[in-house]
Length: 426
Image (cartoon, rainbow, N blue to C red; front, side, top):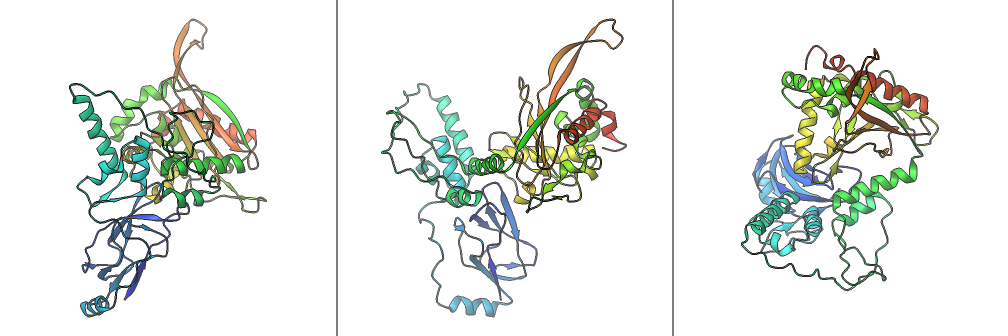
């Protein structure tokens, strides 16, 4: 008989939501087959069975489970399973979900609070577990129903609750994650005027807050930027996309150009050692790319980008883009970056200062293209060109300006000659 305990899925969360079992109680499972799904603060992760056997479920779906908590047992045969079931049931390690309705996961509760939807509306859904995705679908249905009403009633004035005692702010990512499951209410200050509306941060935003706070506390950041002429890169996008079978835009070209600089500018892909006296450089370019399409900010990783073609990188980024739209990443998609590319390409964004993630040396920011009229090289006239600001924030303990300028100008050179990024195959 093998005990199955909740593994440590990531380093940020103190507990995870058990979304559902993929094998029924008493069912047979083989080693390595998918066994259950858990939800962390950032992703949904599918976990595999550590060994084969007949499954004895001990914890139902919907629970918040800490690493190490006993979830199930895998028995070698029916006799072992029957003997275990004849044993008196052990007391549960965590409270059972409420009967008579679905279980609300912590991310779902946070999303409900964020959208102002009462929990009773989610509890009326005909699903066993209400996740963030179900809340988003519920919000869309409610919005559509509101738009189709012939005469919308005047909205009621927001109600404010009596002021609870303010809770101390968590100091670490682990503390933030541990409190996320309870979705605490924001506490009003005594001077808040009547009618002030307070809302808690979503679990995703708390994770962002922890990272940003750690960055500003730990990383002495400097910043520099260069202008890049992306006229040819934008023009070549359609041709490259047709060859690759997916979107190849400025973000994809920039990621590909950045990956090629791993060999030339390795210091920009390094990290500071724990004692602060040296650097640590792992093999490969593992580029985190920011995506925020409405379900929260995510930074999935393009692993081994320096060994991938432009087409492979573009297809991977499209997959990440679709996952960001659904808010459905696996934790391994979000781990292992050694440099970050932050995208700020909404029209009108001229410049952005990125956050350097703790454990990295550098983060690049790509702004939106802007049209600039420049003189022709031969001086006979003028021409309109598309330029962007490509910036880099960097940890000044590891890097100096010369090293970062080398990285930026190298990326700039490749973006201004995009055919060099296409290679022989896409």
